[in-house]
Amino acid sequence: MTGMALLLLALVSDEVYAIRGARIVTLAGEPIEKGVVVIRDGRISEVGPDVAVPEGAEVIEAEGLEVYPGIMDAISQLGLTEVGAVPVTNDTVELGDFNPQIRAATAVHPASEHIPVARANGITHAVAAPGSFSDFGGAGGFGIQGQASLVNLDGWTVEEMAISPSVGMVLRWPSLETRTFDFSTFEPKTLKFEEVKKKYDERVQMLGDWIEDARRYDRAAAAGAEPDLKLEALARVVRKELPLLVVADDERDIRAAVEFASARDLRMALLSGRDSWKVKDLLREKGIPVILGPTLALPATEDTPYDKPLTTASELQAAGVRVIFASFSSANSRLLPHEVGNAVAYGLPWEEGLKSITLYPAELFGVADSLGSIEEGKTANLVVTDGDPLEIKTEIRYLFIDGKLVSLENKHRDLYEKYRARP
Image (cartoon, rainbow, N blue to C red; front, side, top):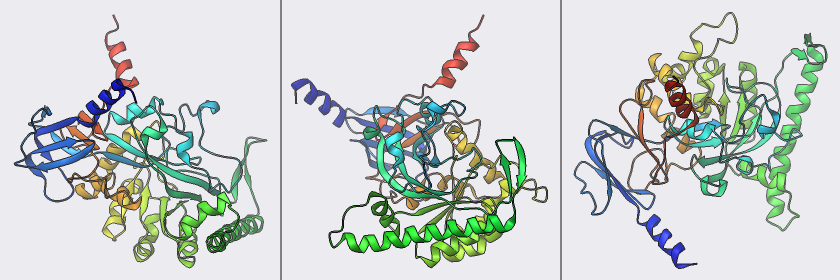
């Protein structure tokens, strides 16, 4: 290593910040009304009301401001898709129904314009998940989509961004849907229930076979069996190292997925879960968390109350179900705090709302020892705001990722300034 490289490394490693005078919402106890957070070597080295500012630290005078843990988008497609209508800018799905060996991190594009936009609204890290999710949490499809990856939203390369290359296995549960759309005629099409049910049963059987094959492979691998990348990846689900992230919306599908996971002793989390409120007692009994999509969505049927997407979170939380929020998107990841704010307005306790995009997803994905709250020794992913981060009027003043003060500049702001100055 050259002398210049060593000098640069020393400068980076000695980087020390002190956020002074702010209200600190730690989520590890009561808020500290006027405290100090010291950041050293990428981590929170000290936090409290009477912490001394280290000599030589870069001080951020934050009186009147607030400090929160960095926000996590628990299921997103940040870095995987840029312009939905331009196929070459999208890398979210692979050919075939069973791709457990695929890791989303390998396709993340660090230079995506969506990343700094999300960052400017407090999103410091996100789970990039494979699959054909819509903005409302996913629709259609079937199969094991691959492994979701947790990344920081800052870095020149995926390797710099990576927190964990694999935090969950995404499965789209098959659905008993008789109405479909025929793209050859561009008209709705109704299928016979018997045909749909037969195909559904075949798919569930295939899923079961894959899980059992992975279980047998896990035993055989210990005895020196030939490597199989697909079964090796699924074996981590069988061993409960990874949660099975099941995308299902209809009540019947949710019940079937829960029964499938319970019968095979798998650790499951429900994604999207439009009808999860109908089975909240079952979800509580099985200890299955729900990752909900945007709250500003239309009700699913003409008989569904208009505000059901807004009240689902509070109903689940009141029933004892762990609620997490996610964007299931790339372009709309920036809106995640505001979607949660709407759920708070419809009955979800404020602290539960904040934890649903900080501490709770960190616990689900096994990184709560380093993320999700403001505690000594944890990674310094922090946001400094001028108010409640769930409120649309709040602005992010400073943002730290991995202990580095990160720019809030982004394409939205650039365009705003450009056209604001138009003669």
